[in-house]
Image (cartoon, rainbow, N blue to C red; front, side):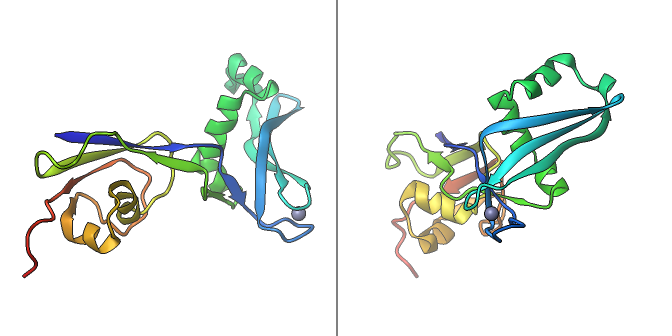
Length: 184
Ligand SMILES: [Zn+2]
């Protein structure tokens, strides 16, 4: 039996970046707005973010001096209308954080969805973890939370194809062994 778990965002993550005015380290995209600036045949596209403590607005570079002809007109239109799906996909693209030297703050912005099936029938139980959004998680913690086990028990009973203690946002599979074996 293979169960599927899903890691899914509940809202957009905040950004960890230092405000030049108030030194706060947290910014938000809010509803999500782009700014498009044409300079001859080149376009700059920014995603606007604002400091959560003083509201100062700053711009994250999405496209820098990109030739207009390289844009699909539909894509450009979605920037002009601040399409929420495009806001999410640009914000979650790892390239954006890297290019703008900030990191995404996922604290409280995601949930683990687990199916309702009971785990007490056939052993061992296999679970496939699917990432609907690229949330960085430590498998050890995620599994402990999903199964209601202590982290020690997870380390003892779980066999996994990736290191349990290393943060990942790529799908993985693990096997839970029965916990009834008396300890030696
Ligand atoms: Zn500020």
